[in-house]
Image 1 (cartoon, one colour):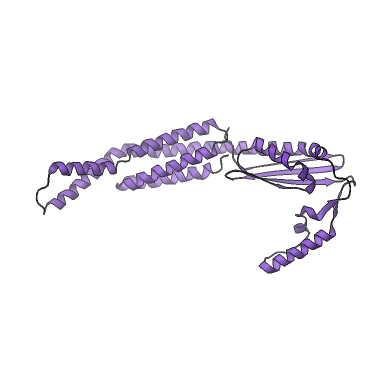
Image 2 (cartoon, rainbow, N blue to C red):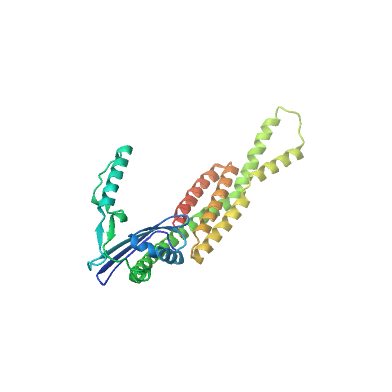
Length: 292
């Protein structure tokens, strides 16, 4: 199954007076990049969080947001005034030095976990994971499900793009012989005009030059390779899984062939068709960037 790199999942659990909320968000990224924004309590299990994500995902920038509240009164969070004052002073200094807009208020301070500390005994890593893991697993499953849903939509769109490109390639294949013959004819006419005021020239040599020039403008091989890339891309999409990098490589090759066809052709009709070809390949490239 094809999967997108864009997704979201969340879950909230309460156990023994502790309330845990987990939110996961992923966006496009060439590699897997995990960022965890959580209370210091979760540092004990950060490695497990990363390993769980790595076992489920291959690419994308993943952000993990965690809220951990102890409503039992034991081990709850209390304000560390010294740290809060220090942060305010430093942030104000940065604001003035860089002439930044905005105010430093509670919403800003609440983004720094070090402002709060627990007033009780910190749970052990095993206990933290036991409390955290159910909410995290549910949120991760929701994110993966969304990436799969988006992946199904991506698959349909990619297939439509490939069909559109194949249609353009088929048109170029039909027009290639005619474009080649027209290129030869134009060259004959130019040579004839040049020879009107010059001594006789070996006709065999002229014919050879025409053939060589025509071969340089022949883009049949590029069309064959472009067709092969399209077929391969179709197979890769049907295969599914983490195929984004492979598809990206194939699209790059399609761009290369389209550019070569455009540079070889001197026929205005073919040139206009190549513009449409490049537009469709670019649309395909944009969508491939979303594939895991």
